[in-house]
Image 1 (tube, protein in one colour):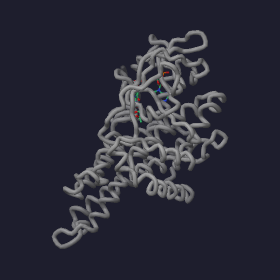
Image 2 (cartoon, rainbow, N blue to C red; image 1 turned 180 degrees about the vertical axis):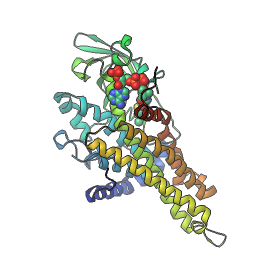
Image 3 (cartoon, rainbow, N blue to C red; image 1 turned 30 degrees about the vertical axis):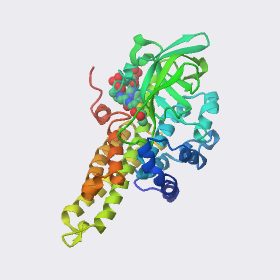
Image 4 (cartoon, rainbow, N blue to C red; image 1 turned 90 degrees about the vertical axis):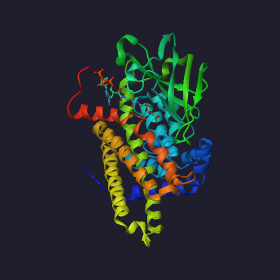
Length: 383
Ligand code: CAA
């Protein structure tokens, strides 16, 4: 197992950091306040090749590795957690299933514009009665001639309504349970496909999240992704990779908060010396730095396994669970170091504190991550 990043990966980190500092940081508080999606910044991310980092150049991607992708999500999240998840949901959830399971025609039609950042991707799995129990999907798809007719709805969909291309899961055979779920590529603008509530969230407010509504949406047969009945496995395999993105988002948010707290602790004088020189604060900072380093190693080792096509589902669950659990502790400590001023609107640590919480919830709650980890180390619990 390798624990160092390459010179190229660190140079790429600097490129993303420069972009994040110049293009995202100056608008981050406004996006948060206005619940506003950063359309211009996302367009520039496409021009810089960020929207297709791990995909081959022949499919419009940057032809880079999975660690570089994790670094990009981390660096964007370091200044704005919402922008980090826009990239993560687009690359890992909206684009990857098409890359991994799509036909050549589907890749040409959908993956290339996604990887180039000309289109935005999203993933529609969660429903009111199918959250942690993703196999409880109630949206249906019935084959009628050359089309599948979709009915139902999805909730909490990241990048909706801005996304153009949606990988959507629906039951083609409800009697078969998880084996009756299929995946479809659904395009914005298809008749009967509309959006519901645009959520007003605690944090990651620059990332848009909305409901998807399917009312007799006729999806061409050629938009079935993989085989009929393969959808649940496609969803699970996609989430294995998505969790590397969420872990990186949590790491980036926490890293940003830690850096602000460190700087502040060196300047803030109490009892005649900087609070960083007082053991109670220096030990807190030492623990924060250690936790961040552990999370980074877990994330990069999962990314490295994915890069080398080795099994990584347990490692990505560990990375997501650990990075977001310690991420919450780190942002909490960062705010504590700032004291009362950290509790104010307009302070980075206040925004980081709100942005972080979702990382323990989405792409599988941290309870579900433990189910996944336990099933790898102990075996699957009997139903
Ligand atoms: N890769 C491939 N196949 C997998 C798999 C994986 N990682 N995990 C399970 N499978 C297969 C199993 O082998 C099994 O196959 P067979 O039918 O051939 O036996 C099948 O899938 C069913 O598996 P389980 O019986 O284990 O399924 P389950 O119903 O018990 O569910 C679970 C398992 C881990 C709890 C799963 O439901 C899960 O991950 N839940 C969490 C859902 C989730 O993460 N949602 C996030 C939504 S997206 C989001 O949040 C995005 C965002 O906003 C940014």
